[in-house]
Amino acid sequence: MGEIVCRHLNISLSTPHDLKRIHKSNAGPEIVRKLRTCALENESRANIRVLGGILIAIRTVAKDAILGREIYNQNLYDFVIRCVDIHPEDSDFRDLVIQTLAEFASDDHTFRTEHDFAIKGIPKVAGLISEYANDELTLNTLLMALHSFMTKLGSYKSINEQPLPRQSLQSLELPRLAKTLVNLLDLPNTSLPLQWDNLELISEALTWIAYYQSKAILDLPSKKGILLFIAFINSPSITIRCRGLLGLLNTYGVDSMPNFRFCDPQRIFRSRGLSPPEAIFALGVVAATHFKEQLADDLISEHYY
Image 1: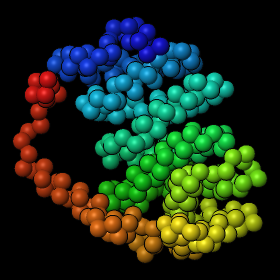
Image 2 (image 1 turned 90 degrees about the vertical axis):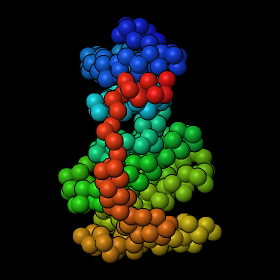
Image 3 (image 1 turned 30 degrees about the horizontal axis):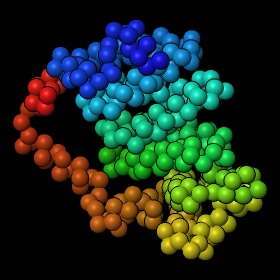
């Protein structure tokens, strides 16, 4: 369907030669604009074949650095997020949406689009996780996407010089996410034992939830959140033990004092010997003053192609 959509829009993305031609003619913005217009026109009709073809075309475009930049400049990633709610009963289309969402989550964008995408993507992923509790591969894909979103959201305060707004925090639906993740670890509720990789991703996500909104952990029934962090402390894995301790410290910490909390992204950067986000950002600002004027996309194409 991707090729059919491309033919309908009179664009070609099949070969590397097609991409070179697009770069040389500086047609990238126009091609992404055509895809965006087509997506908006067909979204309300909910034609799975057409929407699936658009998603395949978007994934192809996103693999190219220059064209991929246009996807985020024109907010086409919003369309990918909205597709989560379209025809959930169609397993093939749903799998395509999840794969596309996961690929976009792992990509590097500008800080603004990363934060916006993470804020919109986390509640969507939270709603999908429970549906795939017994599907190891898809569950791992969703947990990896969640991990990417939460990691990128960690730089919000440093870049914006203010904590995540309350409205944005509420939109993440962390209480629902915490309940969903804890239920994954309740073996009687699943038919398959949890993979170790997924356990590591869940433990890190719960630690972040405790950091952002400790009430989401405290409000879990029967103190499941607290008991789970205590169980983590008794794990044979040093990493999961540390996450259990951090989870408890953050749960009983004060949400309004993030600079003194142990899962603060700043502390994670320092513990790994990395410069904190604001230092990296400041270096980038200084370095930018020494750069020559940015070349247009068509000139870049001439250099590389």
